[in-house]
Amino acid sequence: MSSVLKITDLHVEIEGKEILKGVNLEIKSGEIHAVMGPNGTGKSTLASAIMGHPKYEVTKGSITMDGEDVLEMEVDERAKAGLFLGMQYPSEISGVTTSDFLRSSMNAHRGEGNEVQLMPFIKQMDATMDFLEMDKNMAQRYLNEGFSGGEKKRNEILQLMMIEPAIGILDEIDSGLDIDALKVVSKGINKMRGDAFGCLIITHYQRLLNYIEPDFVHVMMQGRVVKSGGKELAQKLEAQGYEWIKQELGIEDETVEQKA
Ligand SMILES: Nc1ncnc2c1ncn2[C@@H]1O[C@H](COP(=O)(O)OP(=O)(O)O)[C@@H](O)[C@H]1O
Ligand SMILES: [Mg+2]
Image 1 (tube, rainbow, N blue to C red):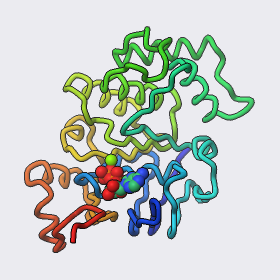
Image 2 (tube, rainbow, N blue to C red; image 1 turned 180 degrees about the vertical axis):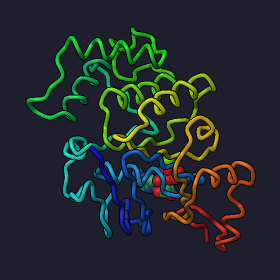
Image 3 (spheres, protein in one colour; image 1 turned 60 degrees about the vertical axis):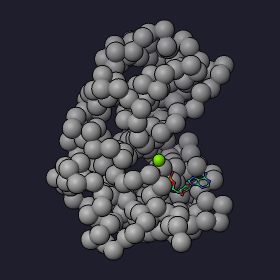
Image 4 (cartoon, rainbow, N blue to C red; image 1 turned 90 degrees about the horizontal axis):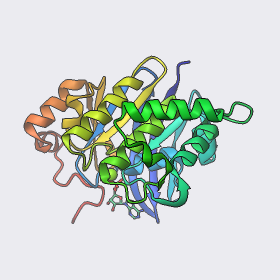
């Protein structure tokens, strides 16, 4: 099935302060998009708004998934519609094992009447944990509790691979990873790549894109997408940084909260 996530003129406020100031993006299954940009330019806000974090208020614009209004959906309905968010800072949940959480999330995505059975679930989880070079004991530990940064990010990719969403949004999945963990995380995303999967990779480093070749690259500044291109744009950013874009656009301060 092919899907399209469409974001049009999206404006988002947090506690009355405007953070996103008109974002336009379209992600189709089969495509890998990278959203890059320095810190404080609104990237995580975009991810949270797409998934429906209650703190983020959409004041203007639209988000649709296959033509359906995502903004009208509850968080669980967004998951059921095929959206998945891998978080920049995954939460630790004491009392819920990684395995139970994973099975519940899978079932939330699959919907009633289509739940995964226990044995196939365990088989698939074991195989996916092997693939991601994860310690099997982690499945029985409480979700993310005491996990290292790299283990938490692998765990996000484990969820991604088990849930198989139509569109995955990965926020700074590469931050804090050593080179081995970075390679494993990339391997997982590349395995997902295909006609049935679209991905929005949010990062402020180019290095992840050495392992995952994006089809499209977007740069965010001041709460907007200010530049889009192909993979060569990421290479140019790697070589030259962000300064040339700021000069080209006449921007002094790229953050959302521009200092006076
Ligand atoms: N929960 C929040 N409460 C108040 N301000 C926030 C919150 N989340 C983000 N912001 C502000 O929004 C701006 C953009 O943040 P963010 O979307 O996290 O940027 P990025 O992910 O690009 O670093 C920052 O100025 C940040 O301080
Ligand atoms: Mg962020």
